[in-house]
Length: 196
Image 1 (cartoon, rainbow, N blue to C red):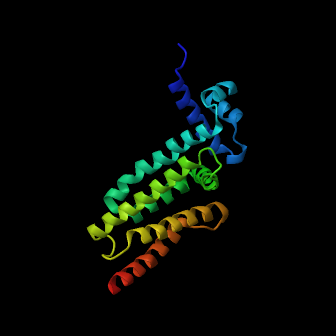
Image 2: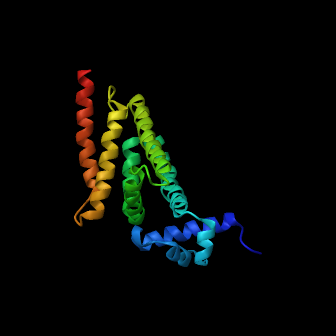
Image 3: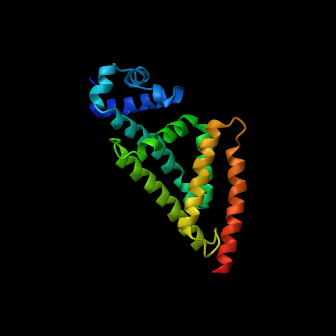
């Protein structure tokens, strides 16, 4: 019995994730995805007639799947613990970090066919962190008077910067750097809250 397009799409997305795990973002194309998916290249092109659709499907499953799976950390322990868990997950999945970083450039280009989707995902991720920080302040995990939006800007910048460093510096220790920076940020948040 032939595979349905739904099954083929799932198989091709899995193959694309595997292709990105073993090769650089810029070297992965339909042939590499087809090889990892175990399907002919023309099947990849038929099921995903636009390459950007496949990349969106990969990011939706891989990045958003990881984000959703780790959200329980935010619910239980707060925004800082959530971003630290995501940083740790990135250490274990460096290919996802490389792909996500490469796609940030695409998201910034209004001409890119998937720019709207990438920007929407980025905004949603930022808003998730902001919401988690609102809950943290209410729950007393972060100092009362902390601006959740400003704290989210700082934490997301730290998270993204450390991920970039981990790709480019052999001596980078993102988790230790995260812990040190968060301790300083929290001291600043507490000091700012005390003056309000």
